[in-house]
Length: 235
Image (tube, rainbow, N blue to C red):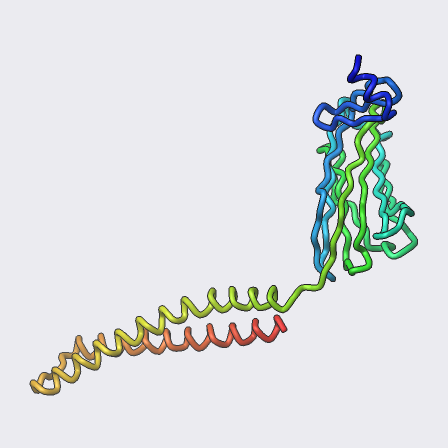
């Protein structure tokens, strides 16, 4: 009784782990649970997915609705940016016009959307609300979106990874080529001192080795050209 009185003095208490809402002396059990990422980080110009999933005790029907809203930083005004009921109804006005896409599937409990060409002005709080009559009581999760510019360090790490993927195999090939050429030169020098003459089979083998070495050299040059081309595209 004391616990109930304490909760009643606050008017409304939420127990998310139990899916229960205590409102004006009455316990309301959530028949619909919604989950969303609390924080999402994205980069300017790169598509961002805002994930929202739900679980309902009732079967999904054409009466199910999904609503996404947006609240800018340092503002209490909430704006509707997407509505779904059998069909998709993205906003046709405001800064999110033609940039909101439906990527969810209500029959799999997915009510996610994506934002194309995001900018720093898109930073703010997004909320996902799902109603599946008769399941209409649910929590309202909030997602804080932070959009930033990709820094030089991120670009540099991409170039470094590309360099590793290209240079390491090339370095191995060059090292093997040098070792093979060194052994061949040492063998020729030793044979020349002893007046050794090659047989027709050895001459044929040397020709094949020279062709292999030439092929390996062309491969190294090609790898270097690919790296230069990828490096220029990155910047």
